[in-house]
Image (cartoon, rainbow, N blue to C red; front, side, top):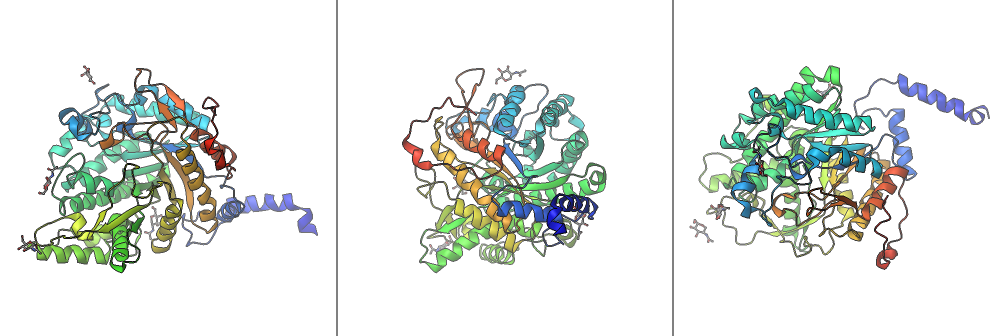
Length: 527
Ligand SMILES: *[C@@H]1O[C@H](CO)[C@@H](O)[C@H](O)[C@H]1NC(C)=O
Ligand SMILES: *[C@@H]1O[C@H](CO)[C@@H](O)[C@H](O)[C@H]1NC(C)=O
Ligand SMILES: *[C@@H]1O[C@H](CO)[C@@H](O)[C@H](O)[C@H]1NC(C)=O
Ligand SMILES: *[C@@H]1O[C@H](CO)[C@@H](O)[C@H](O)[C@H]1NC(C)=O
């Protein structure tokens, strides 16, 4: 047949058709473009689409060091680790960390060796604006990130940049930080400076990293900045982060989008909670509520139909608040204008996913005497065992699949990037647990893409061992080990680099025989 005999002609025609198609929004509800069909077809054959971003993730405070170098201001983590070192398990800090401020070329080189075509970093707000306010602009901060971004682009690596990855300027915390509604504009002022400085080259922006984790622990008394008014401040923090994100997105639309044509999203850690006792219907309902309070809390305002918190969450907090003698709900309300700003304010969801978490009923919770975020859920986390999770294995790839399928079913998410996925251990180079973890999780993605779910990128957390917040340097997430005993901070590849580079370089699911478990790996095999 003519058509069969002219496949290359037909493909050529398809290419030119593709380029003629109007620019559809990145949304699978819209008519499918040929590019989208090609992406799904590749995934059906077990291949990752040609435009898939394969990367690694890091953040400023966890890797850069150089805490007081070249005009950088003090962050809340600098302040906390210097003044209350006992709040970090090993009394450590990020003063030097992995020294990535000076070693960024080495890090980008390692990412290149892994086969990355993308790299997710964060910008330190106090390095750009030492006081947090725009009148304190530090040109050396701009220069540093210019160098980092240019180095990436020079090596064909797409930068994905987070604006707030927890290292708030200390002076803004003195004014209440994320509990103060004025931070919405402080954040927008900072975002404008960053978009203006780097937006000609950076096309993927994540406004805030893991807002729910930061707000629940940081504003529930358990982590820096240790604001301890549970049941009140978590919701204030979340409310203002949602508005800061949406207002920064609006500002990008108005001032930058036409010229810069980037995407502005955010990275949310969405948990997959599992009832400890699956036979107990109350506990199963509690696990659903956990998803609502930790996931839908942010997903519903940004990707739900109504641009607001979930109804059930609003009702529970309102009822509990009344029982506790509050004249109104502890959960703030959005105005009509805020709701329309929140809806359609997110070009992509950055999904941070680690492992499934078992949850249990909050027994003996006295609602009249105790105001608490976890009391509002009526559930608690099952305390971790020495293995770091109540599950014996921290590799639960089925939960990644369930999480993505649920998000895809319940919300209108235009595009997903997995902006963090990773596994910690104590730092051994023969990191079989991490190698298996990456193989298992990456292997699930083509199947999800083949179902029509618009997943466009995957970022392993993390490139290198780094400062892991309250657990300091005791939990290691790196594909490369960092020798923290020497000033050179030497990077050494672990076995898991082999798995990651096989995926990233071949763009198919590589075959690994995990029965090789007990075999001595040659750890010098490298990449
Ligand atoms: C920066 O901090 C280090 C400690 O990490 C200290 O030794 C050094 O003197 C400080 N430098 C400046 C310029 O303050
Ligand atoms: C936080 O407040 C609760 C209740 O008021 C108290 O029991 C707890 O000790 C406080 N935690 C810290 C770290 O101050
Ligand atoms: C949603 O936002 C995009 C840009 O982010 C814009 O092109 C589109 O028109 C908006 N859609 C609606 C319904 O407001
Ligand atoms: C709950 O707390 C209230 C107020 O402190 C107290 O009056 C009540 O007895 C408590 N209920 C239980 C069951 O302990």
